[in-house]
Image (cartoon, rainbow, N blue to C red; front, side, top):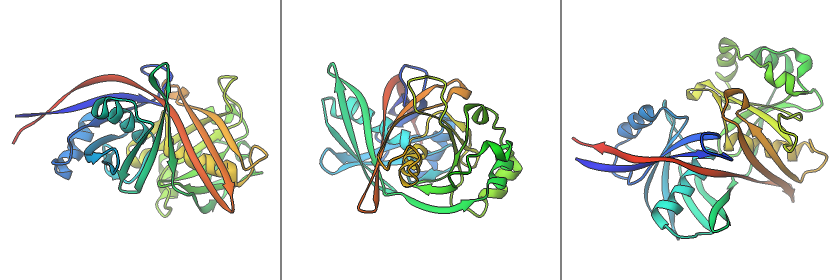
Length: 297
């Protein structure tokens, strides 16, 4: 009977037991797909990652599973997995780590403070802007009045590797009032590429934050996500494209997870150059637990 090491980390967390939980399993290259899926169900977090073969130069092969399915890209699994690779595989300072995902190669930059890994940054693929959605439709899905949606900006699908519907709201009160209609939600996403929704407000719980965010992804088995790097990368691209803050240059601190009592902090950067928007998402990672999975025939 073999033992497979795994680690639990909190991502986009300023302290332990905040942010978004992630399970990272090492030595996963020999596991069958169905076994990885079963382990992800057993972990029952929003995502579980499996680290396969790799090196500092060529990058590390990483696969991402939700409790329901494998996905090609997600933000907090990228940062959390990069942190575990540095701490548990390299075991030394590294300014960059490369992850080879199904969606492509992702570059993660690690900053240090007082000799310890601090904010990790990932570059996301160039954003793609998709279908626009009527305010009436999205307000019915979210269970809020049409007047709560900021009509100065579109409700639109955006993807930086995983698509989300971005919804601009006028206030924190509107954000807090959201009560997702399951029937209308599934009816909406049935024919869309995006299966998850990010709603945001320019008002925040904490005065030193720039935006407050909620993310809903029942399609992936997550009714509400406490911290979502891929979704916030789409948000950063959206803020840049539509000059939401008055400029295509975006550098904001977004809070998420307050409604599910897992407060998170995400750092967003975006900028348009020569018609192309570059996106980076950053956050801190905190180690919570470690252990071994048992592998037997």
